[in-house]
Amino acid sequence: MKTTIDIPENELKEAIKHTGAKTKRDAVVYALIDFNKRRRMAKLTRILGTFQDFMDQNDLKIMREDERWEKRCAKGC
Image (tube, one colour):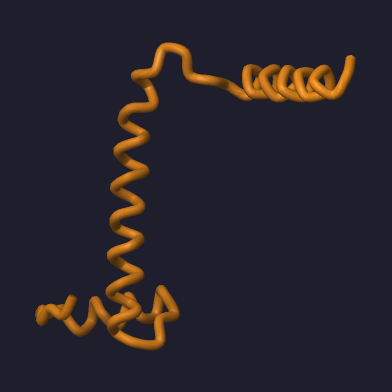
């Protein structure tokens, strides 16, 4: 989608420098992707504390061991 916008030159130059983009368009696209990603992560961070039964590393380890056991039994215990 083509859009005409007025971007402060110093901000655009800094974005190009930080992203290593070769074009202004690439710098703007990268900045939009990064912005959206940070917003999604912030949203997830806000809801993380609301889960009652959120899995920790120990629970994940037990689940993986159970899956391996089930696969072995399926092949013949």
